[in-house]
Image 1 (cartoon, rainbow, N blue to C red):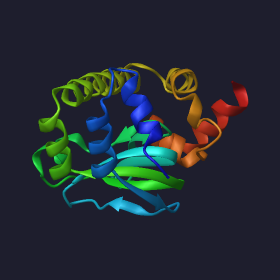
Image 2 (image 1 turned 60 degrees about the vertical axis):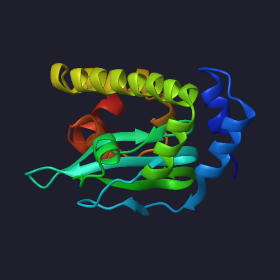
Image 3 (image 1 turned 45 degrees about the vertical axis):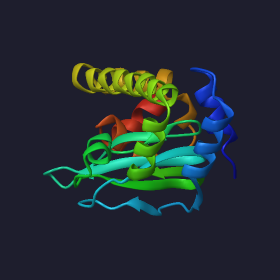
Length: 190
């Protein structure tokens, strides 16, 4: 496992200096994780930002009705954290779990602060990535609250193609806020 994918992703935004590259390699820790392994427990601070080299991670919580709700699923070349908890070192109501065997990089909050305060360039890249993720979440929230089941499923197929053959119907249902039976029906008719 290495940092090449992360550095290449960051280079899509701006040039990365050798010093910045060295800092990234020093501060992001590689880790292999197994399917169903919990990386962040519910009710504990989310003190890590994850980057996925290979595999899938998800962030989920259980609602008042006892139903699992998947907030986000991240795949290769994506980040995942609970940004509010990560930024403020506060408790969170989410669990971050490995969905399939994965190779990831992570940085804890203290080292992340060290990284973005040592380089305005990296801080600027972080701001750009944060804006993109915010737009993604806003669009997804709009879809979940304005579309019927078929509209949500179509949105998923168009915007989350890397997940289509990698997650089971229950996880897809949790991600789309619809029942597993509805997912099965939509798969057959679409």
